Figure 1 (cartoon, helix red, strand yellow):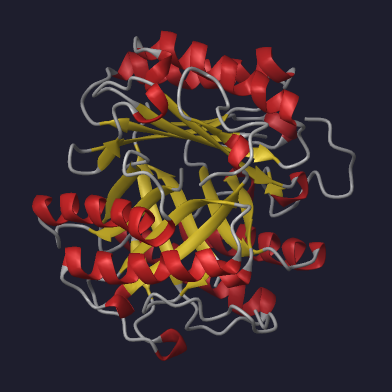
Figure 2 (cartoon, chains in turn blue, red, yellow):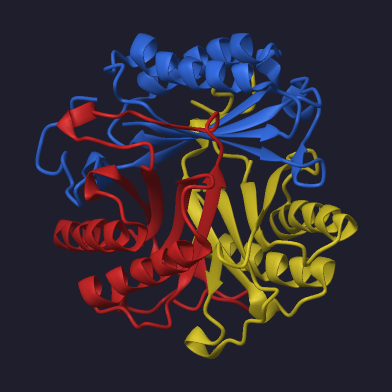
Length: 133
Length: 133
Length: 133
């Protein structure tokens, strides 16, 4: 149930690349954390040149004009080891999908308790259950 | 002070439906949690077909091509009972406003402490006060 | 590493104002919290009239049709004193950049642990380090 929101510079990526990115983000959960492939809830959006400001070298990382910011609504119960795994997978897979350096992929994991997710029907399907994913 | 961000598939909903959704989300707070009607801070945005990926049947819930993702910046102090109430209200009311099944409404409540909200003027109006809403 | 997402009413602000807003948000961190100027990761996006609903006078604050909502992914370790500082700076500087009243600037600080930020390369650069920023 991690939910992605990927913010891209406008008009830099093709529709095929955007679909590939969606698949890459989903696979980062499947391969990195053993999450079911059906757990696929992903948003992308484009920002104009006057709407996306990403520093080119903060922390000695070299970000190009094609750099992106990806936020992930991420289970608050997950340990640091899972965070390491998932950002490694996202970095590699999103880099490949978009044809950009992994230096250009900025990620933030926003912690959300599992009981706060509704998969539909106005219900909190994971409330009161042990965390599986 | 819950703040909504509703992510919709592009060109599926009319302007009237979008305004109705805004009202529905506001009423979900008023009716579900007794929050004042004036507490109305709501964003909607559309995503193209290559920008919104929502699984059609994960967790045995059946989501259509008109499915939406709604995130809510939600008081971190609220108990599970309030979360149940608000997602039930959102599911019913957003479903009615958009003319879609409540199966197609995915919701995430992102916990935010009340003291982290500024209603304007560069001040944190709820810092140091007991949580009312 | 606070990351901004500013939601603006569409077509109200010029490209120059949007760039000024980016600079203003960055400076709110530099001047308010002593964060390095290179820590500059900012998204802006516009919403149509049927996509942004901001109450005009909730909490006796007077918001115009040019009102904005700014969310900030903000270090969860920061004390209330830092929150006061940063929203004061954002209110003043964003008001100046956009030419609107600070009443019209709604801000939410979303807490995120420092270890949840990846500045690139699929790594969590701040994991296991004492919080500097």
